[in-house]
Image (cartoon, rainbow over the protein chains, first blue to last red):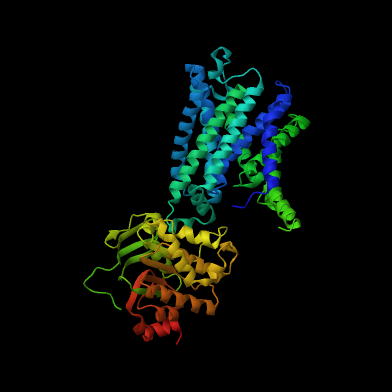
Length: 329
Length: 243
């Protein structure tokens, strides 16, 4: 690992301090706060994806399946049985882990495009099931999280977006911390070995299947918890958005790839760029051009891969190298 | 030199058949490698030499027949467990971890060791064998020359302190001088007590390094014998040495 530049450390502390303080000065019912909430949530999602997509280079395009499982689990359990979404999130994480385990049987031995396509299909499968299984999910019309403020903090529901913001902020920091722990541990080294050369990893004695499986399950469980948080924030969702390819799966991957795949601050930068850009595109063009955000993603992805496959964060590294060279270090 | 006929061989392959998908590459193949022996497998391209090595180290999922290592059956064992038994496979095409430093590559090689503490000692040993690797220990392995990458791959195999070192086409694509140098190191490694199983297209070099050799053709063993004798066998000379 490279030593962190003092300037980079300062920037990190300043960013976290700003994220902690700025929302206090924003309208608690306002649009800006909502955007910040989504940035943190999708930053955390990109980070969760990064555990398996970035560290092991298993480019999953089906993470919406885990996200949706988390959202539906807590919402259905809360709506039908009054179970607190905090426990609902745990149930969602367990179900998503089981789904990841089952999915790994046919997919984990696949490589590259084949893995990406298989996971894409799995995400779509989840969407179709949610659309057809009307008795449980409510089907294509979607499902609402019942508003029960009388249940207190256990309902994880808030009048304004401010408590949600801090919840997302905490989730964002926790997922980042988990990613960092994984990346710098012996487990992270095993993932890196798989990413760099799977045959070499296998012949030195790394159980590549097991390591990929562990990473997938961790990534799936975190994604499901974030799904629950999203449901509690939006109060309403339907299968096509929660299990969406462009709205969730590709967006998660893109945030990590655009920012810098496999790097700790890549998803931070990715979310910082993608979420506002998407909002801008939507507000400028409204609904006149359906599918424009998908189009934007595609263009962005092509541009990044052509210009700098290591992502935006590598621009900061180049800058840092230049600065330190100028300082004669 | 030749294996002790009383003690069982370190590696015994019996009636091995297998390949990729429905297409078998190996046909009822049998061979033995004795403890501390240096055995070469030679043969034309497409004879199935690499496939044989992949079957032994568990990289070929579906095989029938028996592969015994110290009496243990490897046939259904995955590659990572086989590494743990003390079989180091240096695969064809080098396969280093390109973005890891030379030293990180070597340390990964000690991953399956039973005594992780001993890795430091073995690392010194590898650096003594390949001084070039010590000079370049911090360099990313992917940025090195082909010969140096091959040293990394071999050194990584040695980090396991293997009982059996499997070398798959180690001279492929390397400059003649480097090839010569590599083979000297293989002899050093063998002299230090490691059993070596070598697959090599360079038949002359293989037969000069090894004690015993098998000749493979179309997935079968055609011929077996002392390396020196095969070197003077007319059939070998005509088919592989072009004399």
